[in-house]
Length: 441
Ligand SMILES: NC(=O)C1=CN([C@@H]2O[C@H](COP(=O)(O)OP(=O)(O)OC[C@H]3O[C@@H](n4cnc5c(N)ncnc54)[C@H](OP(=O)(O)O)[C@@H]3O)[C@@H](O)[C@H]2O)C=CC1
Ligand SMILES: O=C([O-])CC(=O)C(=O)O
Image 1 (cartoon, helix red, strand yellow):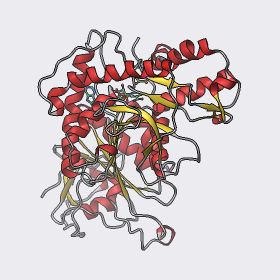
Image 2: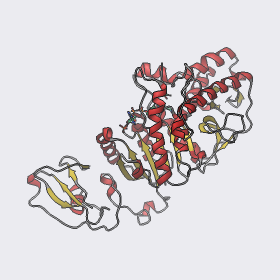
Image 3: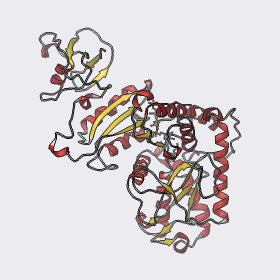
Image 4: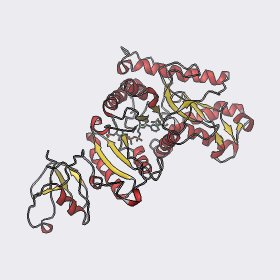
């Protein structure tokens, strides 16, 4: 198989492209040599031919040499094509087996923060090497290359592989984690039902691809909105993967709620615990101040202003995304990336005794009486193995139940609206009028 690439004379990256004149036929071995004075063999197919254009004064004559490494490896990006051997390198001998993380919407704003956090070791620790598969589209391919170049230039020791592409069936191969961020944002005049359909198609396709090629125990975090229903569509299209492995990101809402309670109580936010967000990542979400705690005490014993809790606090959390867009001009990206990292850390580290975290997870078998077969944000605990259990000792009052029922009704309506994508027949869209994403005004 011939790999055709162009080597920019001003930078050290390989870009898939067609050829033009003044080009040089060169093997991958020589290409590596041109890119770096010292190098280890690149793992490209034996017959890979790389054609590059370089300034004519740098090269005397065309060279054609066979690539040396017989081990085939799918397209890799730039410096990440260089081989490494974790066992042979003294300082990496104790490292764990590399994990594969795939990120969709990888050229978008959230990813631009998230990828660098993951590559730094912040989530999985300093002994966990990482391979990153960055999924984009035709429209974002150049931007993906830019992202990969920045990853190269960051010299993260734990980041051992980067691959960019537009085909989920290729990129999701053996994925251990899939962070599904890419989605079309709702534009002016666009109905929410239209958004559910367009984005639903993306998540149906990605569910099928995960089902076909990902690790059977892949953990999936859906961020692209409307994330709960997108997660439901994704899991329905991936019957081989346990439904329990799919999450819709509501950690940003949990973090926003903790921040507001801390502000009101005049404490730093590490004093706020047991914060549940119930329901949809939308303006019907329910930040639960009945079960949350401040300094270990029920919130209502610390903040005695029930009206503030029921009205101002709840609405502030539900609409935080919209207020931020007004001020910042675009939707939360950095804090969303932080919350994705938090959500992942919560699954790979044991939850502190007595505490819990929120995640949008599959409702079938839930102990709260919430309708089955939805993705609904609920309180979870993990022993750090990537899995979780729902928390049982939760109290409810009339206010909380009413609010939860409203969010449940919204998700049931969203589900009917995407029945054509979940294999449940003909879609009927009767969405409640006030159905909004947190970032919508
Ligand atoms: N759950 C949560 O808490 C939050 C969720 N979000 C959601 O996360 C998603 C990504 O946000 P953000 O990174 O800021 O967005 P960006 O617009 O910066 O990036 C989104 C990416 O989505 C991809 N995309 C996929 N399909 C389409 C399509 N049909 N039309 C346009 N773009 C598409 C684009 O990549 P490409 O061109 O490669 O396809 C683009 O790079 C949004 O859906 C947003 O609403 C945001 C904040 C919080
Ligand atoms: O509504 C949006 O697109 C952004 C979002 O989810 C949030 O800020 O919570």
